[in-house]
Length: 215
Image 1 (cartoon, rainbow, N blue to C red):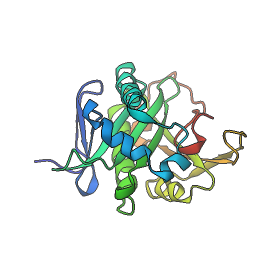
Image 2 (image 1 turned 30 degrees about the horizontal axis):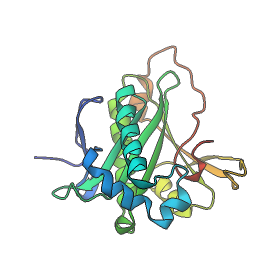
Image 3 (image 1 turned 90 degrees about the vertical axis):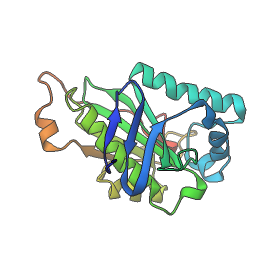
């Protein structure tokens, strides 16, 4: 029997994370290519995401980037689906820029147009947050950050709902990033933070999701 928040995985092998409300986070597959193309045709995706995907070759490159990120241990991206309907894509959620020397990583996500308004983004982010702090606790992960452009109000709500309060505002970097960015952050549970190996030091992580990506 599967339980909400259950994690079945080898961090570098096959993985499934069971999230709230029947969500299932799974590894991306080659056969997801048409769904990725459809997702990136959405005007909202073109507005808010810094990295764009165009055409079958672009989608194939994007999927390969997710695979190589897992292999390198620096980027852990999951396709967001529902139990019993795992071929129907609801979105993407990712932990990236994993820096265990400093105990930091960044979170990002997007949802498909049909999935919006159902709490998919917040449920997927919550599930991945639990996965990240559980999976990398012994390696010293203590802080997750999420970035978005200041006018992306919906992402601000998702971050705060998932326990990522606003930590700081970063300045605009025109022309690519004409507006300021919000950095939201969540610290690991106290028990995880206490178990962090000695000798690690904390420095600010770099970039996260949305138009603020690439800062």
